[in-house]
Length: 204
Image (cartoon, rainbow, N blue to C red):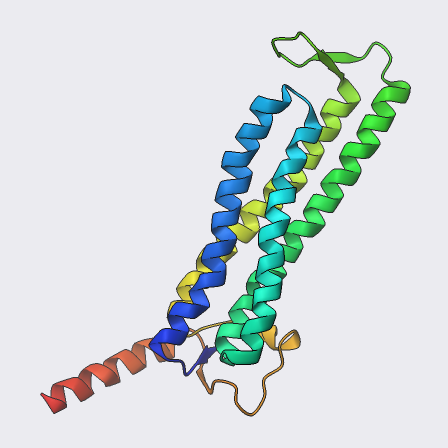
């Protein structure tokens, strides 16, 4: 749904999505590489990734609450959307941690001689069960991150056009002061742009 918004509101509505995607780029690319280097194959060093990411997601939530008290409904709705995507990441982190813990326990109990080289300088090795657990934990987080990263890129575009999915009203109901609905999708955008151009030509 497209809403009647100001230029400032469009700009402010993009901010939570930029923060979300920066969090993904910094933590899941840069920090994960650092964790790999420091850990030498130890999977628990990767807990740095969700740890730092959770701080950013917490900011999205708490700042979003502040925006609701002083900002427009449209801007608040985009902060809520960014927080909902952060919530998806939290769920994927929790699933990954559970998988890692279970794989570690099973590896220590039943691993026996099923060990795999960590390819580290110390020549250490890890239970193959634990390695499999790391793989599945990584897959869960990877696909969650990828999906939400792509969706957030679309939301940045939508924010600039005054658009947000109407389903967000389930989590942030509209009130009497909420931005006015002016149409569905891009079609009204094109029509409004043409009208604005015609008005500017008339005034000139």
